[in-house]
Amino acid sequence: MSEDKPVRACLCYPHTFAELKRLAQENGWRTVAEITAALRCGSGCGLCRPYLAKMLETGETAFAVILNHRGTETQRSHREKQENDPQIDAD
Image (tube, rainbow, N blue to C red; front, side):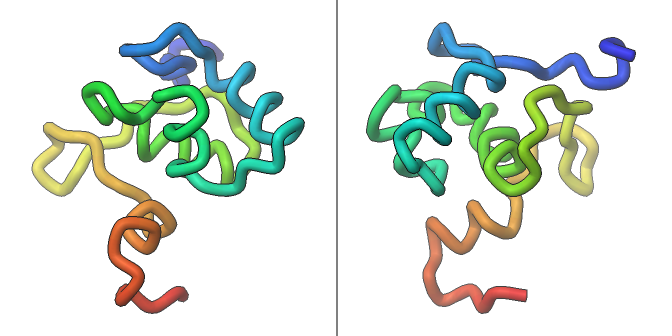
């Protein structure tokens, strides 16, 4: 059901995750940073960053809202944390 996965696009830039997935595959982008550099998605409010990371990890293009432990803010995925802090060990 689409109500279960309402997050389908970047809020700041006019790109759906389905479009971003296709562009990532066509251009060989494997990281959120590469998508951000090419299309600016992830550079505005930043709320799409964990969804972009999950899209790259799983291929999904629609997501349930991701909340942090307080249930209020979007959390970063482990992969995105690694991109921002190379000292984090991979699982």
